[in-house]
Image (cartoon, rainbow, N blue to C red; front, side, top):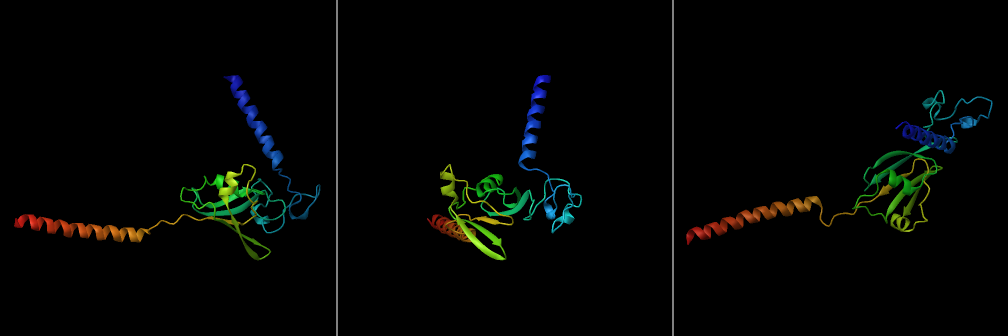
Length: 184
């Protein structure tokens, strides 16, 4: 039992070292500083991390580790996500639990604002999923991804009206049949 515990701890430490290697916590370049000159962060996010602690700095400034992205529409878990910088669309959809069965994955839209100008990028996720070599477009900070749902043939209001009308018609028809039976 002791050997298994030691192996688990060793694996955990190795994974932790890999994560730190992939996302170093060197904040010296955030805000324009250099090595040896201190690591005080400046800029729009400085008030969020006054002591430069933690690796969950979010934003689109140099040195950001995570970027904010929004996912809307026909996914298992729509919402606001903080993804590693340079994440792709496939990763975002995976983090969100995948598309719902009613998702139109061939009509995905990415709204991106860069330099004050909004761009709409249309993506066919179905082609990306079918091609093992493709990972989809790389997302940028503050992208909004929308996966539209397949619209039903009849709206819920129409279905409700048909149901109520059918019930009323059934009651009237039952009354007519009962009345006819009682006369004979």
